[in-house]
Amino acid sequence: MTHTVQMDISSSDSKRFRQQLAAVLPSQSLITDAAGLRPYECDGLTAIREQPWMVVLPESELQVIEVLRLCREFGVPVVPRGAGTGLSGGARPQHDGVVLGLSKMNQILQVDADNCVARLQPGVRNAAISEAAASHGLYYAPDPSSQIACSIGGNVAENSGGVHCLKYGLTVHNVLGVRVVTLDGEVMELGGALWDTPGLDLLAVLCGSEGMLGIVTEVTVSLLPKPPQVIVMLAAFDDVEAAGRAVGSIIGQGIIPAGMEMMDKLAVQAAEAFAHAGYPLTAAAILLIELDGSNLEVDALSDRVTQILQDHSAIHVDIATDTASQQRLWKGRKSAFPAVGRLSPDYYCMDGTIPRHQLSYVLGQITQLSASYGLAVANVFHAGDGNLHPLILFDANQPGQLEAAEKMGGRILELCVAVGGTVTGEHGVGVEKLNQMCVQFNTQELQQFFRLKDAWDPSGLLNPGKGIPTLTRCGELGGMHVRHGELPFPELERF
Image (cartoon, rainbow, N blue to C red):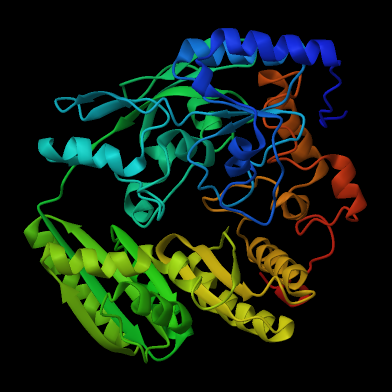
């Protein structure tokens, strides 16, 4: 079984393909010149680049159907693209394929305040959803750090999270329905404006499928009422592992904050210099904890969380009750990625998830890996749900540093799997984590993934080479599986 697509199209067919695309798209929606193609060479993972054959920017579902019909007829690979903020190379083009960008389909079709839902085209920015719902006292909960730019279609493709996913869930928990076009040109409606529908849950299959199954042309999301009271707590620690233990204790006592984020000293110092959020520069780590709910509930939880933090040796605990102070604290966290970019010419952002009780142990192991590879790491975590974002600092101009950063990143992901976690929490697999997928899943499991892919896209033209490693690739890596072979971290056999 092979899933590598190579386009074999004659020059005459190539000409006909372009002509027929031009006939179904406005002239400004077809890009073929080198300068116009250059911005589409990569997504947020800039180390992996490829110039596409051409870019199409449909403005309607009908145009999407026509583009896919032509690509199927001529055997041309299709790489879907949202806002291009992805961090795993999921939107990396193919030199012989078409990038299908959805940025022009950016209309908010409906905000139904009575039923707390909104219907959106896939190019609508994440932040724009809450902006449109704000006048009704509603908001959309998932809030990736890139929310001012990332699109809801891309959020569906990657099953994006954000700082509030601890309490309110990932994209899959907040999307009620989608319209999706398959490569055969069939329009499917999965879910809708209701909370449950009969049959298999194909909507959940589509969320996180990274554009390999179909093209989303409309999304229906649930909106939430703004809570009566919100507070944001900042707790500082002089020990990183103590902060990790505090996270486990809060969750262990049955408290589920709206968000609970952790940053180590290097990340804190970078974010403070960039955003002036008021973070303590001498702390080894900080926790940002948001509590929301009724006034009585928040007051009671605040007292309990404060006591837990003090029991775990927090240096001090500050509480922000006004909106401006809260936004300032969150601005520092959401600015952490660009802020760290000021510390080093390059950085490599990882994304893995672990059981919460392993947080302090994994932090210690990352410190050891940092020393072993000679590369500094700034740690930014969705601590409450165990989603890690170590930022490995390096200089691509220094021979061997990029390769070292990639190897170290792979080791971190393998560590996540070894302690019972997974290679991604919200960034997706793309092309970045294909090798680590060989570590997490065995042959039978990978074959099941391919069977699902084949059921939706038997020609293999939708985002080929992404998300699922071929069995050949895994075999060339030695067939190493954490659960079915030799552990890459032998000392973890006790877990």
